[in-house]
Length: 151
Image 1 (cartoon, rainbow, N blue to C red):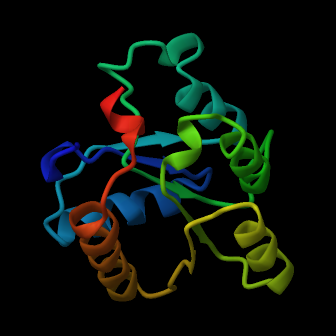
Image 2 (image 1 turned 120 degrees about the vertical axis):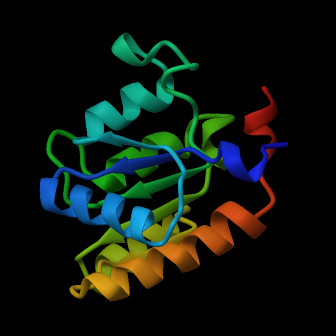
């Protein structure tokens, strides 16, 4: 089982401003989890699959949580989710969609494909910080982790 301090986060986000704000929200909330960032859907698949430059699991560990944007270059967030849910062990990693899309079709499709939670990026930084604190409490502190992490 993973301890609280070993919780790595994979942030799949192409917007540099959103990357900055999420990392800043974690710091401001005094949350010190390592955040690994990939900027497109193909990179997310390579990271999670341990391919190419992401082969070293010491340097690129499996995340305890994936924060996934939907609107990504090369492969959309939903395509990443679809790939992930076809992987025997990786499909157990909790995925939280963090996006600006309020489209019902996106929300429904993400849940149909097995997303664990769907969050709309707040506009105000304080709201983002509160969201990251809540996300930390639920997914990284209280959540029971699947056995993908003990392999």
